[in-house]
Length: 319
Image: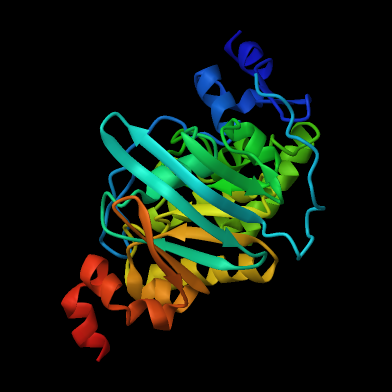
């Protein structure tokens, strides 16, 4: 009975189609499985300490989008353009008049001190929050305030700072959840999931239960789940958190390979030593506002960035 109920759970798509959540998710609340299929995370779960690094991490009805103003892949139109986006929570101005654009194939790093508004900005970009003012253009179309599943169908994927896997399911089953936004049935979803698992280097443990994975493997599985939806634009929220130095290099290699394959990437990350080796440009936020945007060399030598975020130790080390 539980399997039948789960197999009939539908996840509405932007184009009016629907994707089935597979029978494999027996015991997972239907609303939770459907939400994940549309780009939202399931409930948080603890994760296992990574044996290699010795580190652990605490796991902590929308209408169809308007016709694109430009074809997907049109190099003349930024894949993402943010215009004067603001969001207030009561008396707190979390994001104020943020504007920037991301060209296709770019890796943009978003940095700033805790409380700068980075994750709030991500939530505004992918529909978890509605901006008070401003525009979020994806492929030239204003998608501000659209639901996450609509943005997912439009080509935007996301990972989360707090890993939220289905711990009783296998790697492949976890990743398959993310495929339903684009899949034409369960067999197609399974194939998209297998492709995503291979892209992040987890093919050898595809049938391994998530509760047995290391932190590095869980991070890669989360990345694969986002990739299963075949995004053109990928938002990564602290994908390197909890990883040792060698593991960071492994994940950076995967991210670079995705970029070479044509995926545009926007990443929030505090690991600056890794970020300066990865990104094409930085966007620096402070108190919810854009402080500066530029290439790694200029940003790491900017006195405003050193003062607000990097600190004198970084400046002295770089010198």
